[in-house]
Image 1 (tube, rainbow, N blue to C red):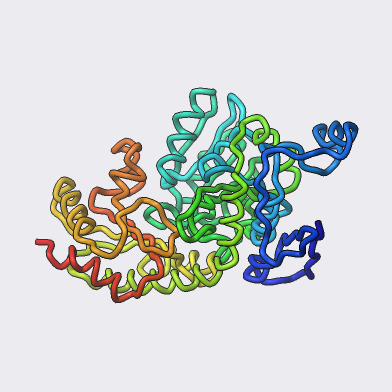
Image 2: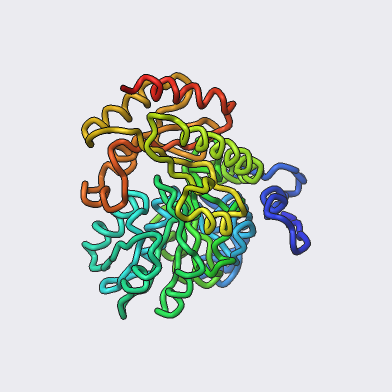
Length: 404
């Protein structure tokens, strides 16, 4: 197998296509897909050395695979980290991070606006094993600082958040983590390295759900953690080997190819999202639009500084209503009136998807948690794809125009 050495200073768009291209003896131009669960060893001694970690080489499919390695190396180069490790899904990446870094008695500070499953995993599931947690306002830096305890080991933020697109000050949180002797992890799912590289602002760990924009066409599930070589090898790899949350080679290959178009997709979908958000702001049935690209967004200037001047491809809007029960019915009416856009809870696809967060992605949260996160019954999230913008507007107007 031959490895191509690239010059320094390449743009992430180029790295998305050219990084970590390891060719077999056949010299293929497109990355090879290695479908194997085991590897024949050159000798008993080499096998012993490889299983002990004293020699490079593949030993077993749960521990590593050449196609998976290519995906990890390419994503790390795009995020600007020393290494990356992949998992079967975004949530398994978060589980790996927590299992690798935390033990009973440790404390985590998280945004209260994070994805519902993340809140449940850290706030409820890990609590059974003695991990303490505090959930604070995403945008209040003082709240993060005041939540720090002597046993705080990790700060975890998602920016922009799902579904209200709240943006946190990554550099400020990195300073707080550093002063506390803790690590800062950032969920970069919405922005991706095409728009935002958290390590450049001081983050220690970047988490990805490769299921979303990294794949880009809703085909497979994947997750990853990007971090220093030390964290990956000493903290995360042992969890992968024993826990088995391994990314399948085929899924790795699909996302690896998806990375090649990430930059151009994110720019195009961000432009579409901005146009749709601007139109929604003018609609008489819409109470409020949440999108970082809008000047009306509370963290607009911060988002533009952190995300390369683009707002990303996800927005949310609240329909006008008199009470929560009415709001839910009105939101359902808009969703059920669609004929082109998909009623689906995923995001990051070329197909535009709309969903009702309060009853789907954040349905497992308590009403108190949803209220704290600002997720009302009239909220609709739209993950903008690549259909023509006028067709998107017409499809949403089909329901919005008939609200009474």
